[in-house]
Length: 64
Image 1 (cartoon, rainbow, N blue to C red):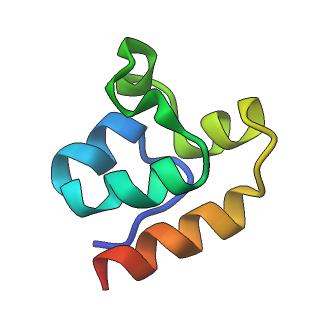
Image 2: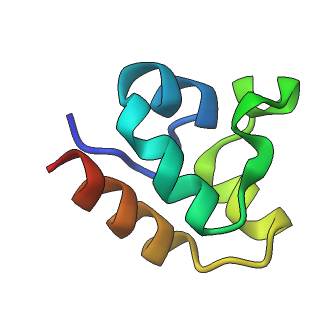
């Protein structure tokens, strides 16, 4: 399965725990936050002022 912008942070972390370090490296310490269960990667990137495409690429590299 490939990680896409529409995935929630919660789903990504549950299915791919190895992505936590990548999320943290982008300044997204919200991996354990309750809103992470419903917030998509695209929404979280926007809130944090990040390029969603770069985040998705890094996450997919982490699970490759």
